[in-house]
Image (tube, rainbow, N blue to C red; front, side, top):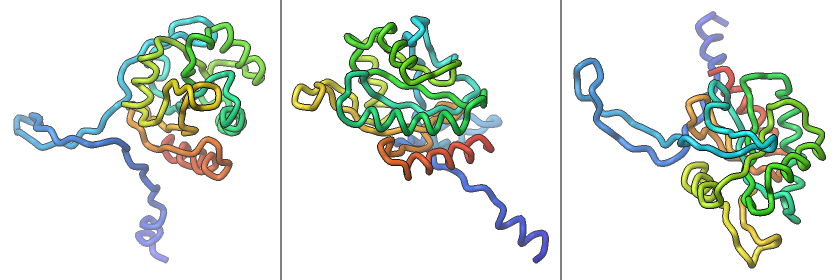
Length: 200
């Protein structure tokens, strides 16, 4: 096999950018050019499980996995957290990787409650952050920007509805993949895609 043929097959796959794109006109090198822009995760300010302010700055230079949960969730959250521990274990010690779990029950899930939750999971270090904050801001960022369901619903078990999604975000805050956090197979695919994204 020639070197060229070998190179063709060694190309790394590229993950898509998710969300509705928009075509805008920008000046590039003094010329008006049509540019496709994708939505990014906006700036945010929450409070983490160590009772410290947590903003997008703490995720600068990292790819990260986001999800939405609540500590008293009687259904899918325990399975999701078990699968997220697999992700954590796989990338442990990699400073370019983060995990960001948003509570959708901020009235109950105070920093102290989240801190105990993190302790019960046996977490050490800063790779996995649990955040709380203004309820509407959490729901807004979940539904409009991470593209998942996250809201109060008295008819649902535990009083909240949320998707079991793990959302993969790149270093530029673009969403690059959405995975089923309740599935071991989908979590394995997430781990595979994280490795691809780290090579970008």
